[in-house]
Every structure is written in structure tokens, then in C-alpha cells.
Length: 180
Image (cartoon, rainbow, N blue to C red; front, top):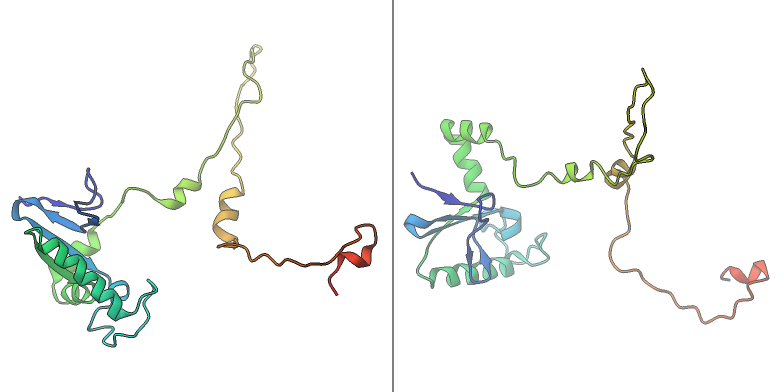
């Protein structure tokens, strides 16, 4: 049986220098890289070098960066197999067994970000209560709107732009509080 070390493995992704591998087969000394087409500038999907990718780099720049990474890994005496997203999609569309395996694959991953919003700080309102005969003691759990607001509200991001106004303001007169 071949064991492939991935991000979900007990020790996480295999590191080679400053790089992490998508997959590592120790027995074969084989690195497996899965490149998303739009993130790595697949030559089939992004043939022009000057197309801007979501990384902020052009497709040509990203391919060059990826090639340097692959060369570093290969220079360590490691075999590298690179699979592109579009190639995997093509394989899945043609291979019934592979399609079935992908469809049935459950990736429960290390964390579900949405579930991190559940719960919160709790504190007792009363540390001890001696119940009277026949009295029922219970607690009431309130689901806060905090998770919903965090998920559904837009927040400003980045650094604020500070506008310095060199103007004397008389804080006691209403009209001097507004810019003219």
C-alpha cells in the first residue's frame, strides 16, 4: 500500500526547504503537485504570459516562479509529478471509476471555518442554587446574532486613508464642524 502524505496527514504537508508539497510518497521519493489553473497560470488555459492572475502576478511570472520551485525540489533528488486542474477534470470526465471516487470522497478537512462562529463566552449568573422540593433547575441558551453579523456584514479592510485637514475648528459653533 502506498501512503501519500498531504495537508490532512498527521504531520501535515511534507516540507522541502521553504516549500510545502501537495503530496509526498516517501517510498518512491515522489513529490506530487496539484496546480489550480487560475492560480498557477496553466499554459493551456492561460496561453498569454501577460494575463493577470488572482495572485497579482502575470501568468508568465507565476509559471517562472513555479519552475524555480520545481527546480529546487528536483535538485534535492526528488521526482516531481505535476497535475493541472484542467487535466484532472478531463481525467474525471473520461474515467468512470475516478469520477465515482471523486464524487464519494468526503473531505472533512482539519477545520470548518463556519463552525468556528458557534459558541462564545459564557458565564454563570448564579454559582449555586439550592432547589426547593419539586423545583426544576434549567439553563437557557441564547444563540447570538454575532456569528450571523460576522458572516453577512461587510467590514472595511486594509489600512485607513487619513485625511489631515489643517483648519482651526471652533467646537462650540455648529457650522465650524462641517467642511466647506
